[in-house]
Image 1 (cartoon, rainbow, N blue to C red):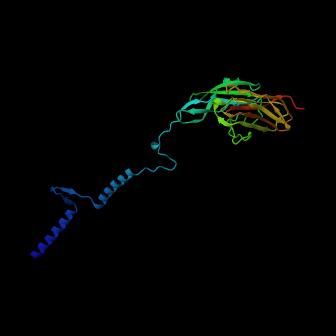
Image 2: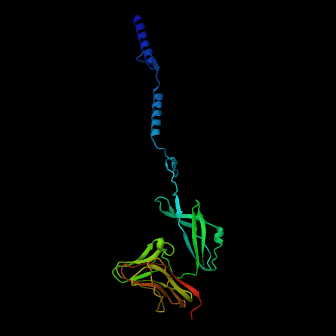
Image 3: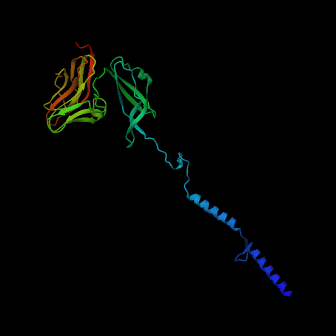
Length: 306
């Protein structure tokens, strides 16, 4: 009986000790700390891991949205100045002022087009019922001033007469020699109007002609003209027209060294409106000569052909 009591006491002591280990942990300094259950500890450690991972990840935005906080603001190019504009209007046609003006941006930003607002009072003064030259002022949205030269004149039946458009296929050039001494240049200071012009220059003798064939003309009397300047020695230069196989020439052009524009003309061209007409310029000069031609014209002066 005594042995049974001793065994029962030992079993009770062991069980009590195991139960205590589930609740207490002995610290090295002799203190005690309560421990968490396995599930709670895993949740705490798992929470810390998710937080660290979230801080290291880039936030994903919905499709179509941008993270504006990471995009630098782009400042618009600053306008240095606006180029003068030229508008040609045929007699009797309505006046439509250009909505955009060419500008030069500061630094190395190049050029571009910007909206322009014209002075309404000055626009109203432009009368297209008669030939004339008008100056209309305007401003860009930022206040930059703009000037437009409005030219009211009879219709010019030649296409691209001032070489301002990229398509110059209507103009033909033939020359003698191994190389073409002519071309189109983009130099506003060297042009009669606009910024482009036709040029010729060579160290060798030059003999060439430039011309355009015109059709669908109204019957009537016409005048052809061109503006030319340069420095050409021993030169034979003239404007010419071919009508019904007959060549008509202007008076010879004498260039004075490039300072003065000459304007040879052919007046009284009787055209029936059915036959094509050729308008051109012939040049023959010594080596070292140069010249610039601009603003060819063929305009109706009134009257009818017989």
